[in-house]
Length: 224
Image 1 (cartoon, one colour):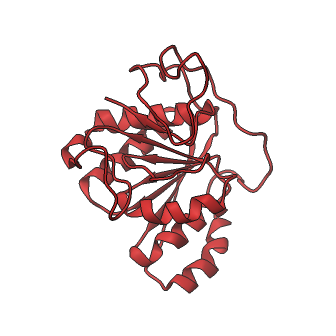
Image 2: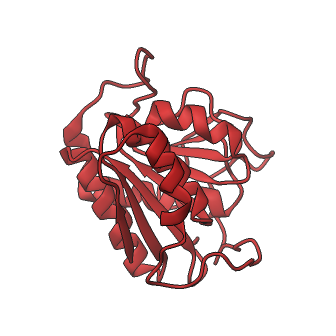
């Protein structure tokens, strides 16, 4: 696993060096073209309605465990994009890391050092050419709302938060206690840091990745 921890720097400098950092790797060569990844397995009954896919920006409440049959292909390229060292964010980071170890995922991490580094960190994550960028940390929600709409070919998964108006390439997983949508915006539930248990974070990662791999995207997956 490659970890890129960004030092504090000005916005202009960070944007300039992002492409250089993106070329650094201790693992496989992500610059080589490859087919679009295909899910291993399929969603079970109760994840989506049999009548058809959900509408854009819809919220799904899938049957628990209906995502368990879906996994990533070996070597699936994932960038964990993270900001903040609060307990909820740390729990999410741990969940993504453990999932990657369990599923033989090629994981790299980009960490934003401060508020000025949020947008450059997102750009850096995109430039790494990942199959999926997983976002952990409420501080990234507002910058992602700006950047993700301009990079529609890059899939994003936001865990423990959501974008207010996601484009088709942004999928989110929320639960009661985790529904931050950005500064000044209402949420569908009251924020509760204690709701970010290891078990719930692990479930959220698996449910969200299953949705992305199954092309059920641009929506919010709500888990109990």
